[in-house]
Image (tube, rainbow, N blue to C red; front, side, top):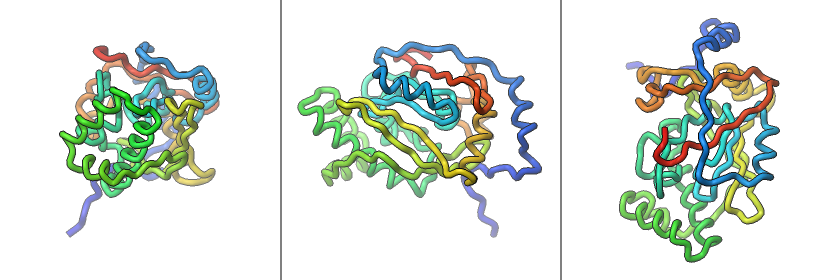
Length: 252
């Protein structure tokens, strides 16, 4: 019996070409910028502006997205507008199965360990911080996996990691993920790259042309993504960089 992969198949060259990618630009509309209640530090914003051909975003030490460029949005999907602990990707990772959809299932245990070690580091750095305490307490109640990992007391801040991202149209993209922390450790610039000449590098080039397209649930997207009305205009490689703030709580 033939086993089918649960992840989208990367189209072969004769099915998916640069010309086909560019032809999709006419069907996409520009998205509007939305302010967030928190602001990214100017130094990290300045670096983000220079990463015109690289998926990048600025996040907090609790993995709340503050601002991101269009390629990060296309690669990782839209960050939902949430209040409280749910604004953190770490919190959603352990409480909402949809948060894991863009990562191969075999990589989930590794990411879980990394996220908990990051949160341990944030808790140690912040001391008696009510925001961290509230998140940890909520996660311990809702996730046995988190509770077991938290009790190991592993503390780490990874500045480089290998990641595989499941893209709805391009399939699994193997990338290197880097983190640059601010001086106080409260924020970090996160960006993705691939070795020159690798399949991941070619997929990133295609991603810069595709941008964020409106896709149906049958193409592997969550319902909230398929119904999105605001799309990001694609950017050809080498064109000026743009970035968008994460959605404010209570707004779409």
